[in-house]
Length: 114
Image 1: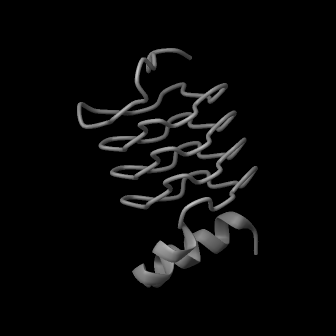
Image 2 (image 1 turned 90 degrees about the vertical axis):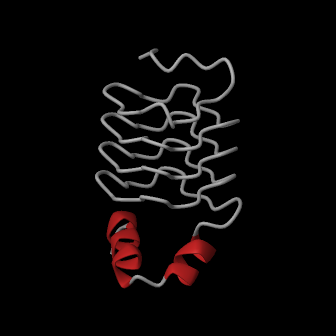
Image 3 (image 1 turned 90 degrees about the horizontal axis):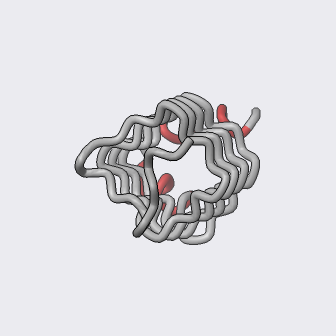
């Protein structure tokens, strides 16, 4: 089972206590393929998401504060209400990202850069 299938199975289980433990501080998902996965409301604080594929993922209301997302592919991802404060988005692909007035971006971050 690949990373995407494991996460999808975990999310579908509905075991919220286990899900919270799986995404605790410093979880390392470097290079994982989460394309199209629904992470609504998940907690990724301090997670390592370097070069992770989150293309088209639903990250609505997700806490990504202090996450390391250098080189992550967020093309077409939904970030409505997501907390990205203090998140490293260096070299992240943000083409077609959906955000709203509730999305919290890193200080001085240009969300319109491509």
